Amino acid sequence: MHDDIKLVSGEEIVKPTGEVHVVYFSSISNNTHRFIQKLSVKNSRIPYELEEEINVDSDYVLITPTYSGGGEFTSGAVPKQVIKFLNKENNRNYCRGVIASGNTNFGNTFAMAGPILSKKLNVPLLYQFELLGTQNDVEKINEILKEFWGK
Image (cartoon, rainbow, N blue to C red; front, side, top):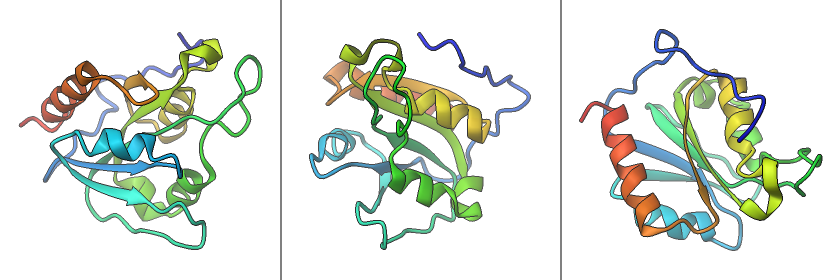
């Protein structure tokens, strides 16, 4: 779906260790938050307020919504809060994969935050889902995370 996805080879993938852990961002709408609550994994939320922060000291997969206007408008696809979180080297270094949500109405910019972050962090884009996700998305992501951690 995205022309600029960087394929991460098996040699480049750093498999996570420890407990399955998801770090996520959700806006005031709480769409991503409601989705995360359906997953059966440990999770940490990136604060909405830019002056607040969290620090992560274990492997995790990042789940983020995509902000963009669609078409050629990809600027701002990654939420500012996610950028701030990842600007901390320690937080960035523990990221092992990315999952993104988006709106298919935006065509080829659907869930664009995923490919952008995957390429920037050199981690695999594990999955993309639309808006609130479906029960099938919940099951698929639980399966992907379990397999990714080797559990």
